[in-house]
Length: 314
Figure 1 (cartoon, rainbow, N blue to C red):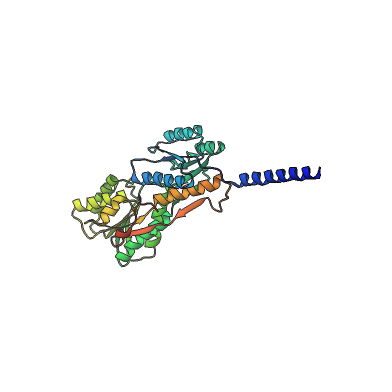
Figure 2: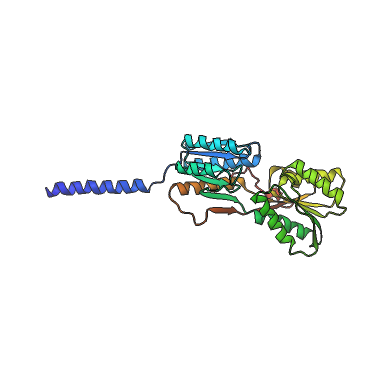
């Protein structure tokens, strides 16, 4: 009798250990849905590739489905509904509208899906991973201040009034504010974040202002457009800097352009970090801070040769 009880106790104890081990095991990562601004943009393509690489590292059989919202809020709502129907474990969200997307975010979370915002914040998301845009503005405009020895006429070529752009301009202005010899000629024109917008804005500046020493553009497409405008108007000796570290700017830094530096973003690391954080949340990890800011690095003509670029695996 005693022997039988001991055996039963041993089995029960064994089952107890087995259950504890099972409970301690991480939830598997089976699938991720990714919705981004545009898959025609190399930046977002790199975000998808980075997410895939990290997901496969966690589970070689993990499935990553990426879709392009094309900056259309209704389209993104539908995409998130589709991810919910497909029972994905996690959604990486580059919100078309950071505030208006909240009902879709809440719906996904109610279905037990972890939502991580990438590149820009999304109301209600479990976590956000983005570039430290204030620092990026500081780096890019710090380069201008140094290049001009603290004296000259500068332009801040602004962009769409989203948080990332506002932060870049804020960082830039904080640097110029410490340089009494630097005069800001213009800081409020929205060049639309595009090459064409940058070209149009720069043509206006150079027609209006006879002496321009430097231009800070809020992203690389605007920098490329501004350089083209300066070439057309045969204006030289202007320092152009920007933010992104995009493939186009690598080319510009290696060739005969006025572009001198760009504070880089790292979409590969951004996606990897987002998947890592999302997987931790899936398994009950509590975040001390839901916002993760990735540091920016200044890429210049001198350092572009050793710059890894957006698409290089880390």
